[in-house]
Image (cartoon, rainbow, N blue to C red; front, side):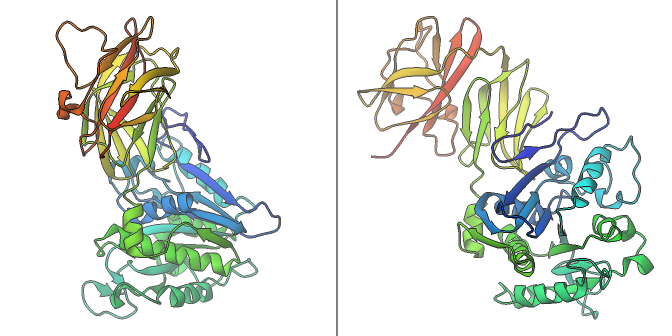
Length: 435
């Protein structure tokens, strides 16, 4: 299933029979000024490293660039992200030296290579979660030279004559600033030089090594898998990204305080989901884990979300809504034909006349009543009265609705479906709010 572009997100859709199901999003946040540095941030090359993709999601959503440019790919290996696997089709970070055309990752790897080599891109960050805590000297099984976590990774000391080519110097400077005000002292970052050309054949196939062999500076940021709180890992990723922006003279503002507790709350805000062409809008942050009787267009199902980590995965008669590697809700599908002829409805909210666009969330305190619509049938999901074919002109209070049919966790929001003959024409969601 292909996900399509929406708002500021440019989704690059795969077309080959052999390509991955979900391609990545590219979000360009630019100041509009010329001759300024461009940072490319790539998250999600490994699908089981959520610190590496939830951080760029927040970067895309909450940062404004005032000077310079930041290009963000938050979901590079999207098929693996939604399955919480390192690599569904093998390790994508070992396919940058050579990849077969029949490899399902071929199109994605080819496209991200072109992006890295774009003349505007001055520096690339590849975001990961790695095992343990890197230390130059062996301390124990978690703190040692073989660990990858809490490290800024470089492939070599420098790239001669390249802008931002002093890799070791930049990494050291960034780490020194990142290591101020750590959540725990053991979370300190250190520079890990893999000396890729001479010592690490596996890393010779990596994204960062591809970049530097093309005279383009690149670093990997690795937070530790041993840190269990996602908000902590995202905090460190964002903090490090900001230090790189400072090095590149990129100026920005963000809509929140960079604190782990604030990030924890931001991660709970999954955002809205739109299912066109018949207008269906869902608040993903409040959805129940499972929703029955959900209309799905059997001819052409697609969706939009401003959250680039949101994907809907079709599995038999179910549609699983994912936010990265997190299952938000499962839609139990009613497959049917759709009709897009209805745009607005009339109703009474707490006794007062009102109108509403199809697809919107409507709030009521005590009761609602949907006005008749000539040629259309109305079905209030969770309401039942024997002999009623169209549930119009009925005063509906919370007490007459079956809470098991509510679509939100607090069981206050109910779907109202509209039909023309047997075709689904959209719905509104009505939420009962506290006095």
